[in-house]
Image 1 (tube, helix red, strand yellow):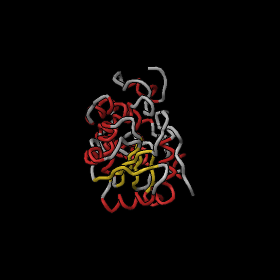
Image 2 (image 1 turned 180 degrees about the vertical axis):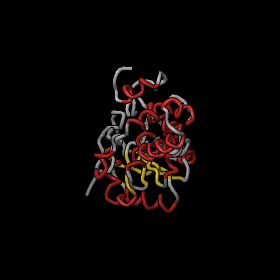
Image 3 (image 1 turned 90 degrees about the vertical axis):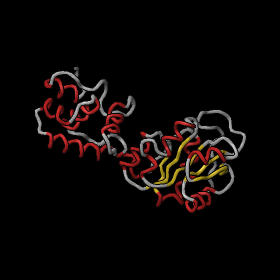
Image 4 (image 1 turned 135 degrees about the horizontal axis):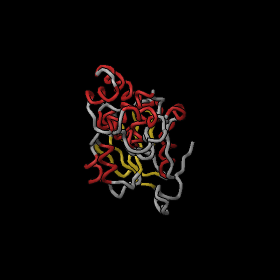
Length: 234
């Protein structure tokens, strides 16, 4: 199936030449992905094992970068975050494992398109085309699950207090829970959020567009927690 990109960049400016694409992956994976991308409306202008090398050797400015690898791509300070910082106007596509949590984490990291590795052969070109047209592209199989997973009232309360900077002991005291119960709620919430640290959880909760809680994290008396966690007045 022939894929043609939109005649504009993701920013809406006219594109007079094929979109410039770079690949960050191992050499074997770069060859595989370049073969899937081929030639035509998208031109592979560079490939490397790391972001800095790619940017140094790319023959022209990148419209889109494709990253392939494991969860380390999305780690704090990792390749995707670095590229997003250095080239905020370039689109990003990640080719990695499947699963709702990792896709959600990728979107929070600024990724524009996500392709499960097993689907790359038939989905990569379409995803690249979509992100170059300014769209967000995720696998259809998980589109109904990409929104926030349902959190219990207690999980929301605990996450709000984590975002406020409280320790487990302070949260336990505030909510009249044991520390082990707080840890249990955090473990479940981290899994739902697709994060692995308190800092990542706090960032997810406080995200102004996709955050779990609207407004500032709770810092008032415990009897206000339930109402604000459910979206009521403080």
